[in-house]
Each structure stands twice: as structure tokens, then as C-alpha cells.
Length: 194
Image 1 (spheres, rainbow, N blue to C red):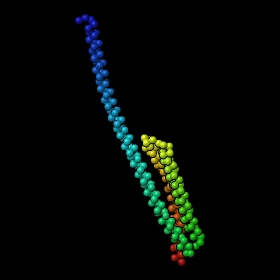
Image 2: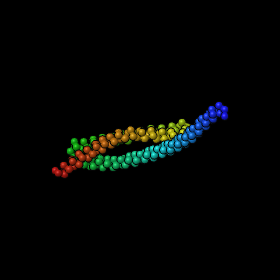
Image 3: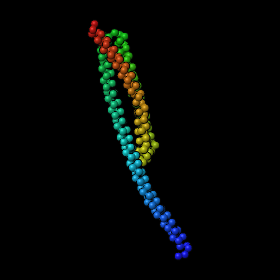
Image 4: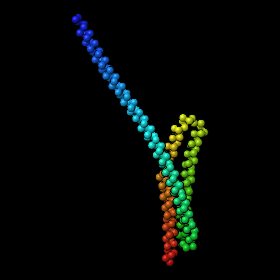
């Protein structure tokens, strides 16, 4: 054996070791790539689920808001009808200053409620105007769903922003009518007691 043979054997051995390390790294890289693909797929599925739940929640909130608004409007209309009917039929039985206060409180309540409903109409018209841009601007079919979702999200944000104002308006409107009703009941009770 000559002097170069051991060196060549060592060089071949080192090259084989490097090749084995490279092959091990390659299989490790393939495993990592496969895991990354798996996690990307799970992330995509999770994103789709989140979008689905977001849409469902948005639809549920929208439907609940519409049903609640209808219910409140019906109850308020019935309440106003009873309030003003009782107020007008009992004017001879009540002290004029109480009669005026009861009427004023009722009209304040109706005015606040009507202004709120007009504001609601304005908000709905604004949403319709935004939706009209979809048709006016000639949006492509592929872009339609994304823009529709954007408009729905915008509408939901608006609804969330005006919710505290709505609670305040309903509280003041109901408070005015309730106080007027209490004054009316007290006046009628005092009339019965005398």
C-alpha cells in the first residue's frame, strides 16, 4: 500500500460521512417541510372556521337586533296609545298643572323616540347607499363577496357604536313616559281618595 492510499481512504470516508449527514439533513428537511405544510393546512382550516363563525355571529347579531327593534317599536306604540288615551280621557279628573306635566312628559318621550327612529332610518339609508355602490361601480363577481363582507362588517361596527346611544335614548324615552304615568296614576288615585 502506498502512502496516498490511507489518505484517499480517509477522504472517501469523510465524503461518505458528509453524504450521510446530508442525507439525514435532507430527510429532516423533508419532515420539517411536511410538518410546515400540515400546520399551514390546519391554519387555513382554522381561518375558514373563524370566518364561518364570524359570519354566523354577525348574522345572529343582525337578526337579534332587527327582532328586538321590532319588539320595542310594537311595545312602545301600544304603550303610547294607552298613555295618551288615558291622559286625554282623564283631563277633567286631574289638576291642570299635572295634566300639562303628564302631556309634556309624554310628548318629550314621543319626540325622543321619533328622533331616534329617524336616525335609524338615516343609518339604514347610508347602508343602502353603500350597497348601491356595488352595482353602480360594476364590481366583478369575484370581488362581490369580499366587498359585501366589508359592508356587512362596517354595518356591524356602526350598530355596535350606536348601541350605547340606543340604550340611553330608550332609557330617557321610557323614563319620561314612566314618570308621566306615575304622575297620572298618583293624580287619579288622589282624585279617588277625595
